[in-house]
Image (cartoon, rainbow, N blue to C red; front, side):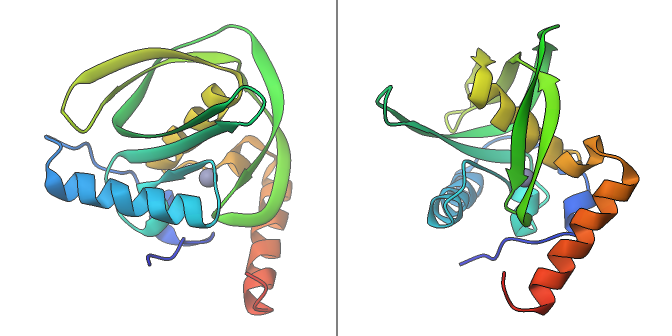
Length: 170
Ligand SMILES: [Zn+2]
């Protein structure tokens, strides 16, 4: 299984490349990503996080009360518009295990992506799903949630992850 990269791995800071056409190799890759994401478990994964610089994001939106369990893949996802309204939500990241912070972002977005049949999909997303997608799409640009914090806080988070790794706790 492909391992998830932790900060400060340079691949997490690189830009992922646009996919010209979704072929079997991208589909296979996305399946692998879904496996990695579900095994952790996580709610989202960007290809950068397993060291692959392609614009692929996987998400799992799970809500037992609402009986929602939706896992899907987005190729070349792009945010087309943001709501003016912003909300604060706590975020974490598989590349920064055990680190959490309150981050303010737009409440809803319109996302455009292609699916495995190379169809263009444009959808409005709200709340938690909009949050996960904004976080994951940032990864494709080499951006992390800690970039929304002060540099002091950001460095503390990175140091903590390095320490956890050194101690063999992650
Ligand atoms: Zn993340």
